[in-house]
Length: 112
Image 1 (cartoon, one colour):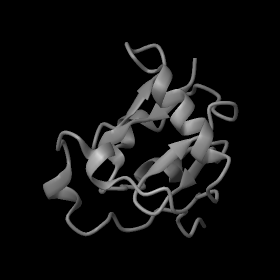
Image 2: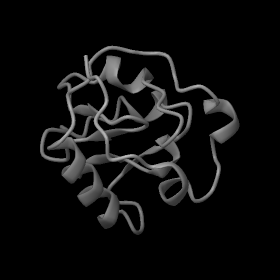
Image 3: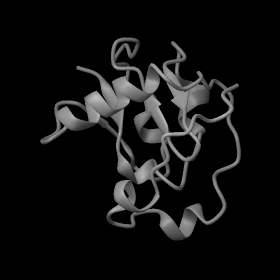
């Protein structure tokens, strides 16, 4: 099992999760985070820290696409280990449907 970041992180990018991760397996895009599935040790400490409830175990239904999404971008984006402010408008976009199609950017974040 591994944990993955799903579409509710897009356009919010809360980073509460990165500070509690014992193995630093989070990677930062311009407007979302991902978890490297091969680096995640399945400890689960990140899941309750996510205000957007965007982190789920890969055992949930239909998670295969999110495992591959997380794998792809974690290999392209910089590692992030420090908490940052969420994106402007995060509270309004939290829970919005269709965020992958509306807002997702492949551009890397700053990391750090």
